[in-house]
Picture (cartoon, rainbow, N blue to C red):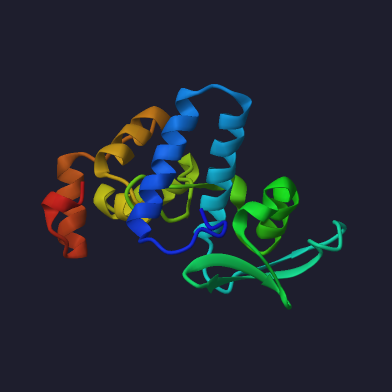
Length: 186
């Protein structure tokens, strides 16, 4: 979560986060919903690269300035000169933080977390999927690996978006031309 919790392994922290999210989902209270939103917000900030910088303007003097992501005693923190804040400290200013992160080159509105890798990747749009699969002739496995999901997820997405898959014979021909194993290219 990155808001000042000391020690503990990464697995313990992940387990605590999962339990907090699960508990927040079961209870429908406003506090539980806010807690779940804070956790999600902190996860987004956690997965930005170390030394990532964003600049906040037109806020209170406590938040204005250039913030750099750093690690302080094993915890993610944001430094602005001598001032240090933790992820959750920015939650009330999240709209401005997201705008600043987008200005710095990360399209927050198009980011999601694949279940297995837990790293930020851009969403796969119909146009991008069509370009990768039909234009660049990438296999379902290659696309899935790039986006941190399974081949089956890519197949379901293609079906949902109305994109046609290559036939087995087309796959074999392209694999032979490209020098790939024909079984893995469909």
